[in-house]
Structure formats: structure tokens, C-alpha cells
Length: 349
Image 1 (tube, rainbow, N blue to C red):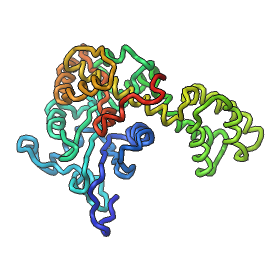
Image 2: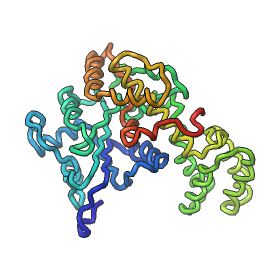
Image 3: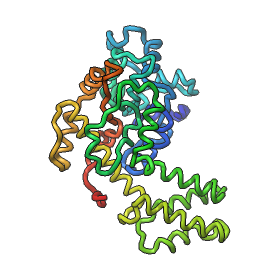
Image 4: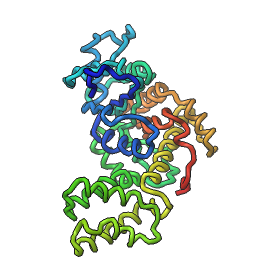
């Protein structure tokens, strides 16, 4: 957090996310795969509750009529004050403010008026902030069954889902993306828990070297070099073959890419899928072009307020309605710099 004895520092980006998954999984990965995106991990604030509670916090600070009177909302102030951060922050401390929250129609505090007012208010990252709403939840970025997944553009969930855990389990069972995202964390857990590498520095270096492999040509020798002298010979033999198996299952090295390069391409694909789907939700026209210029045109046509309005209409009937599966926060990569989602080396995986 800020050290105000040195004066306030403007020029930073603030990312406010709903939960730990956004910070510790998705944006942790995005920032590793796209080092061009300059957000300090210390400026990723986890709000620990949903957008409807945030709405109520704004009401407490600015009054019931805050939306009607177009109040100038200072979200860093509202959030840092609520979380009792030692040094209260203000929006003037930040150049860009990004908000990432779930739609969560099943939440008892949900009203269309609340979420519409939030989407209408937070439209500019350089002012009060830019709001990205994920439908139905953050896990939608993982809701691809294959790569490519031609059915993603049609994927919906029933409006009758009344608990986030149900959707999370659905995604986990069917996702080709979830194991890729979890891989670095599972790798560290494996080295820590099964092979008892207790020294965190040694364990981290080991993980980084495994994630940096970009060839399977002499993988046995490479893995042996990585784990040599950090565990006894019996454990090392078991570890070697398990690690080789895991590396093969993740496919990055066989494509001549490190894990980070491979996942950069995967994240780019996820962003493109969601850009095309957002445009389809609005216009009901499926994209047949497959070039960066067409992707840019589709992105520039996206209207998040229009999408929210459509989602609200389609999901009002809780028994027969549905919600389009759509992840909007992955599009922040394109918003930051559209060139980051253009075709790159190894993008034919």
C-alpha cells in the first residue's frame, strides 16, 4: 500500500477483484504471461464480496440517490475505508481503475436496477473505473471443453442455478483450461507435499525451470538436471517420471514453447472467443473472419451495457430462462493493448 511519507504516487493501475481466484489464479497468470501489462500485485485488491454489496457501500457513502445525481464516486476511497486500510486511498492516486465482478443473478441482493446503474457508471478506467462483469461468474473463462471449441459461442447456463458452487463444479468437470491454469500451483504442491522440498527458494527455482522447458527432445536429462541434488535418489527417480508425465500432458514443451509462452497463446485465444461471443450476443451474427483486423472491429463494437441488458432479459424467467456464458475481464488484455492478442509464435497449438 502507499507510503505517504514519500508522497502520493500517481501513474499506477488499480485492479479491484471480487475474490481470491481472480487475483491468485487468473490475473496472476495474465501478468506472468503478459509482462507488458503494468499492474503491481500489491495494487490488486480483493474485495471479498460481490457487486451488490459494493453497491450498498456506495449508498452508505454517497446516499440512495447517488446514481440519479451522477455523483463522482471515489471507489478507492470507499473500499480502502471499508477495509480499514491504514492509509486511505483515493482515485487521484491511480491512473487507471479496473473492476472485476460476477453477475450472480442468484444472489439475494441482486436487482437489475443495481447492476445496471453500476455498469452505466463505471465505464472509464481513467475516471471512476471500468467495470467488467463476468457471466455467470469468473470461472466462465475456463468454460471451454476443447481448444478449439466451436460450441463455446452457443454455450449458456440455466437461470435456475442458485449457487455459485454448482457452476464452478460444472466448469471443473468439463474444462480443458482449468488444468492448464492450475498446473504451476499443482507443480509447487507436488514438490512441497509429495517430494518434501521444504526450502521455498529451492522449490520456486525448481518450478520455474520446469515451466521454462521448451523442448521434449532430451527431456529426461533436462528434468534430471533440475531435480539433481535437491532430493534423495529414490525420490528423484519417482519425481523424474511423474514430472515428465505432467509436462507431456500440458503440451507446452512439445510445441517448442515455455509454459508462459504457451499460456500466453491460450489466454489470447480465450480473449478472442469472448470478443466474438460478445459481438454475437449483441448482433446474433457469427463471425466467419479469422484475422486480427476483424477481431479488432468486433471488439470495438462491444457495448457492455447492451450485453447486460440482454442478459437481464433472458434470465428473468428463473425456470426457463438462461444466461450466456461470457467472460469480459479477459478482454482487459485487448483493452490494455490490442496487439497483445494478435497472432504470435506457436499460435497453432
